[in-house]
Length: 129
Image (cartoon, rainbow, N blue to C red; front, side, top):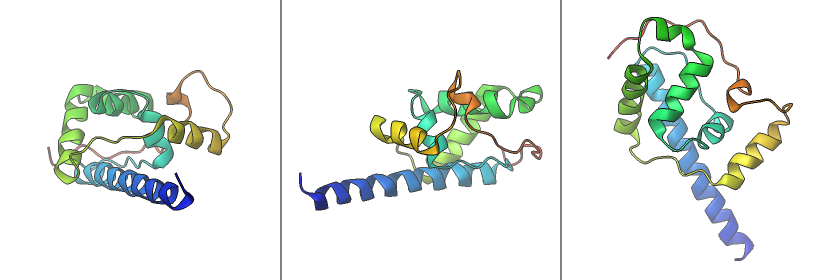
């Protein structure tokens, strides 16, 4: 494969990642959640097979206080439904990309991917479901 083929493949992958991020972040906005994912978060979550399970793992790790009012299944399904309305395809992160993103951030080794990402915790009530 020549250099231009690699560039085209990388740019198609980057466009897909951007579309996924836009769909997820729009879903969060629509539901009144102040979650914000970036490429690094998406790559870390891509190591989990199921999209709903990815969302559930994120909520359990970073916004567990929401589980006092909502079940993780309810929240995950609501987010995934909104996300799929914007971009139905599942993220197809290449393992090398996930590994590269994880290494690029140069964070200390931690026992789980859940410990690697930090977000603000002050969230409004879930709306629009």
